[in-house]
Length: 85
Image (cartoon, rainbow, N blue to C red; front, side):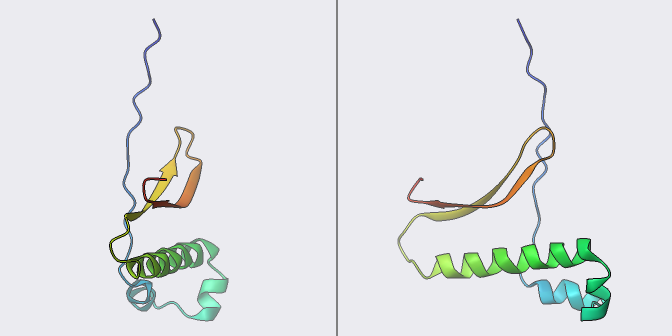
């Protein structure tokens, strides 16, 4: 019988407004163009925030936002669930 490998679930954390993080980091357009990892993190936070705001306009509808990461570290950054699908 094969045992399943235990996968450690690491939740993602997002800023409510990525402008706060950008300001604290002293991010300027020039600095962000030289640091694509930070730029990507801030952009991902911005997109997620905007999708959540958009979904909040659909009152009474069961919408939720998730992400997926497999055991190899491959990731889907944004999955929108609408009415259980």
